[in-house]
Length: 405
Image (cartoon, rainbow, N blue to C red; front, side, top):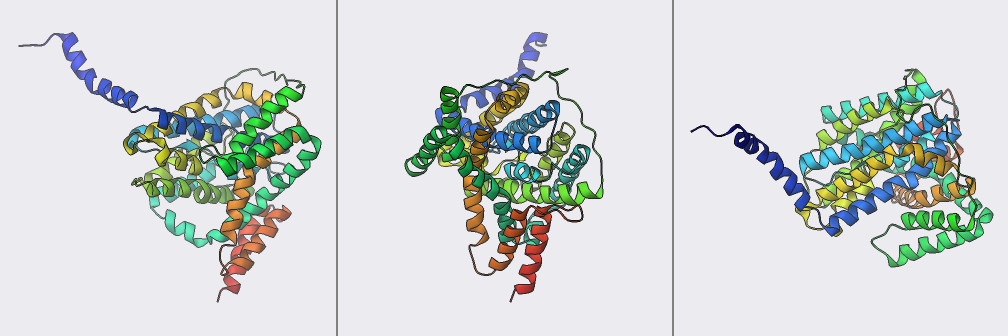
């Protein structure tokens, strides 16, 4: 007997409905709260550093909004798709260390070449992913040398935090107190996140802000034209791809493994490259597996292991929405006092500086090479159109090789 057409259609739809029902039923208070904490961490400190990098490069308002939209929209979308596909807490975002690196070079590399460098960086990551040589690439340069270079990059931001406390003593004092209080008494809320929220809230109460008005011909993102050059390759693509792989993709995959998952390493690396290439055409440097955020969503605080993927989905959703609101977020942040922006960037990077200093000088084997990389990166020197981070890695690796017993 033939079934009515409507009944046949309901049968065909039932597997989809079952999947949707399962996803909804997997939401609980633990994974929802972990997802919100993860997303807040992604959209606070990194956004401040991103806009400071845009200001260093004299980006237009449209270029800054494009950048903000691209990395948060596609970073969030990446996390949602990969988490639902693999049923694992794979959080998507963009590279904070990548933005910190770019803030040192946006002033002297043309915008179109930056876009070309972003695309090439994503292409390198994709090729490394499909080739399966990710682990071997990470062994070519000692991890300690890369960490020292990163520490040199972000040290200046933390120093400016001290200077900003002099200009905004009330805001800075309350925020600093909250940072240390959360560090000592809270295991759930990251100190940097708490300090950033307290600093903004205190500023809104104590300061009169002149909200910047940004006039745009369109609120929609626009395609950015890349320019490929030797400078884009050497000063942007190579160091940026190394930073993304070593400080975002590798820690994110490591966090999943530590939590008892078996992540598809090659696929995660390759798809990070694909999403980064797409993001580059809208002005963003990358969209990839997020390291620290993945650790938050894959831990035991995110609830039962089988449903922790929903923490990453929640995180991705909030991140994606934040990206679509970039045209509102950018003018608001631009209206904040410059001292406050420096303060927020410093708070966001304290833990990054501390962890990388620990890693850089954790043993005796690489100390002199790590110190070389740290000093060269801190100098912010540019020579032969090659930026300080690249020279830091090259000099640090060379000294390590020479001094190695």
